[in-house]
Amino acid sequence: MKMIFDSKALWKERFSAYTTEVMRYLRYMFNDHLLFVLIIGLGAGIFYYAGWVKTLEPSFPVIPLMVILLTASIAISPVATLLQKPDVVYLIVQEKAMDAYFSQAKIASFFMQLYVFVIVLGICMPMYVEVTGIPYSQFFTLFIVLALLKAWNIYFGFESMKLEDADTTWMFVRVIVNAILIYISLISAPFISIPLVLVVILASYYWIKKKTSKVTLRWEYLVDKEEARMNRFYRLVNLFTDVPHLRGTVRRRNYLDFLYQPIPYAKRKTFAYLFSRTFVRTNEYIGLYVRLTVIAVILLVFVQGFYLNIIFSLLFLYLTGFQFIPMLKHYDAQIMLRLYPIDDAYRHRSFIHFLRILLLGQAILFSLIGIAQNGTIGGMVILGINLAFVAIFTFLYAPIRIKKMYE
Image (cartoon, rainbow, N blue to C red; front, side, top):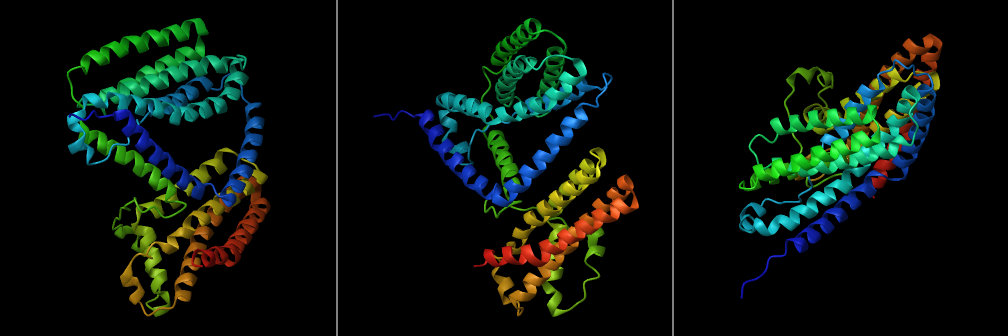
């Protein structure tokens, strides 16, 4: 008797495993310490943003800015297919029966990404209302338009992946269409924007359906896209805890050798040298440090204020220090490392000293921006506060956290 393949049951099984894994990692990411810092940072950001919005002039380019931000939040619509490498062999013969599976994947992807454009729209609305004078009730019209466009992007994006030029031509087409429709929605009435969006969606639906009706799925391409999507999530989680699924990438970067050349050749400095080279050569660590530093500098430069400078400086110093602590366990799985005739006390001490150097670099940079904005006295106060935080974090907080990690 021939067995009936149930693709819906397969989707439910994989989606359940996926949500369980995501929720487990989210618990590690949003722990009590990080939530406390995020709440303080969010509160400060909302307070200063509300004050900044009131200073906007009618000439402020709010509509072009919203078009860019909303288009990015809508056009970037990866479909969570949850496909795995063995599917290329075992499920390719069930391609027709997989229609229900991929339909479920599109619906789930829509709801998983719904919050992105809602947050962007919520942030942009005060600027939009202040500059244009349009009431907040326009939020609901824009939400409907953006929800329709999001659903269209997910469907059109998935169907276009059957075509060879999915990553270039069709992505460009989607971005242009999204930008035009969002711009029209921002400047016109609902009875114009919503019907126009519906007409474009229906016309493109029948067009792409006809174009891909005789084209089969590119299974290997879909698996690669899904692995890339999951790797982005794992890299984010890896900032907070170890992720066994993630394979780090390493580059030589000999032009940065000068950073660890001053380290003396001594037994007690073995781990200092190891952590320094790991930081320079491993994309995850040096990338994390550069990203956090650049984001902090942008915020400090464009959102000015003495107290705000202090808040953002301390916030990013904490985030950097907190997210680098797991680096201490980077080599725990390396058995050869245990052959080093070096006490763990040297290892922990070297790591804390390495962490202190990273935070001092940020503290000085943030303080220089504070001096440029608030004068010498204000900048020196910010420098003193930043240095005090680095001392408390590296001499008190970090040793306690490291001790708990190895209990």
